[in-house]
Amino acid sequence: MAHTRILRAFAALSLAMVAVLAPAAAQAASDGPASHLAAPRPADVPTDVDDFSYSSWDAVYEIGLDDEGRARMRVTETLVARFPDVDQNRGIVRGLATSYEGASIETTILSVTDSNGADVPYETDEEDGLLYVLTGNDDDFVRGLTTYVIEYEMRDVILATDRSEGSSAPPADEFYWDLLPLDSTQPIDRFRAEIVFDPAMSNALNGATRCYSGPSGSKEECELEGPTTDGRSATFRVESGPRPAGDGVTVAIGFEPGTATQPLARTPDPVADVAPIVAAVGALGLAAGSWVAVSAFARRRRAATGIVVAQYDVPDSLPPLLAAAVVPGAEDVIPSEIVHLAVRGMLRIEEGTEEDEPRVRRLGEAHSPDQLDVDALEALFLDADADGVVDLPAADEAFAARMTALQHRGTTEAQSRGLTEKARSRSAVILQWCAIGLAVVGLAFGIWSAASGRLSAIPALVVISIGAFLVLLSSVYPFSKHTVLTVEGARTYEYLQGVKEFIRVADADRLRMLQSYTGAERRADGTADVIHVYERLLPYAILFGMEREWGDVLEKAYASAERGASWIGDPASFALRTQLASFVASSHSAATYSAPSAGSSSSAGGAFGGGFSGGGGGGGFSGGR
Image 1: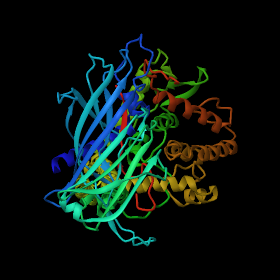
Image 2: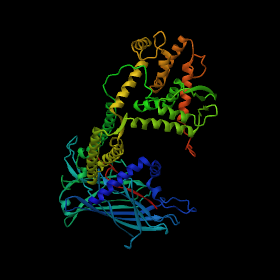
Image 3: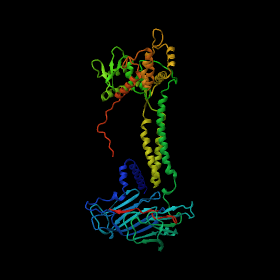
Image 4: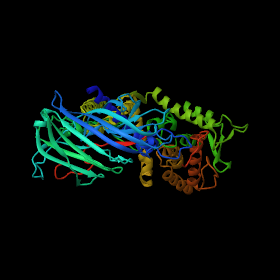
């Protein structure tokens, strides 16, 4: 039984996942069990398989206590169906409840026979809390009066009720059961039911009984005969004449409290229902913490002295391709490298024949101080014409691939030069192992709670299952080695932060810094060549995303010197910011171009004194096949 309950718990979990991942299937299920289970009819039969009636509906309920003191019920239903005299039906569909008040009742079909006791072929299907019995087969039709005798068993059909709060009635156990399916489209000519209790339960009867009839929610009372005693067993009877489709009969029979042992699933246990959810939240929180720990680890590795001093010059051994590997979140790396080559006199940026395709011209007189600059020149001018001129293409995958490889070369070069290394965060690993451990414990507890038959534990099991999956999925990041700065790399990063600080401060402060240092390039009168210094910093301003601000500073410097930039556009123009913004946008687009994927497309597309009919367990469904 425990094995069966575990399988049912996982079946419920699977259904929950399918409902999330397969909305189309959920929509099909919403059409109703009758349409889902009905076999296809011949095209020449226009009638519906549910278009029949029952001549009689008789049921015998035998209820007793097992060795554990839990209620067990054996039911024999004798249903005489009246089918039309056409090839419409292959049988009936009887739906039986599989749970009651939060607990599985372990519904088991024992047999399906005809009026002579011969076996009737059938199959079962479980869906939406009902076990469907589909009689007959797809090859044979049935006509006229046809008898089906369905025998089945259920467990834990006696419910313990506590009326101590808000009610004057004392606590009691009760058999509160729907004897007819309220979800039915077939009328019944005659209905009769017998409810027989074993001696132990008969001795525990407290005399309280109720009977309700009518559609779901009706409080109209009906006559429940009994109890009559045959030997030591007590029997109750209820019967009626014609009943329209969906008209139910519900009985409530009371017992002394504690008569039937209740399943664990009905025992209040908020821990079992909530603990897996808490474990899922905690595990996901720890997993998130491990990701934060990785980021904190990378930030700690960027600190060398913790002191940032404004710098107005960048050494030749730190071209933008290499600096981008040290500066987290560096922007527009390729445009920055091209501008770097331009301001150092190795190429000139010109307007192309197309507005979004600027042209670069190679200049032979300048020397490339770093091998990365040499590699960048070769990659840029691979397709140059005889004059050393090439248009940066707006849509060329080959060019974009070269630029991507060039940027990757800067990353690998940073590692080979000892600026970066691969390392794993120990604190992140510890946090992630804690997350996995908590998820595993929560999942095991959730499975145990669901396996005990507690239906209320199913949502928590779903949550912890999803949480455990996400925790395992997230483990790749904290368990991996990440690129972080070495001690030398941290010093380089602080130096570049000093460059950023120099770019950020006011112009008067920058001039003071230039006059106070001896390393700046000097004019004959001993003052610093401001334009030369500012031009050299422009590529790094682009890396920091500060090209607009620095472009404005350069424009003012050019205007003060009454000349324009010699490395881009029209030298007579002082509109550097406009030219620079256009070039950065165009070159970034060219370096990151990716052709649209081929073939992609989009498409639109009962309580005693407070009960009612249909309020108990059982009931189920009836329809045609």
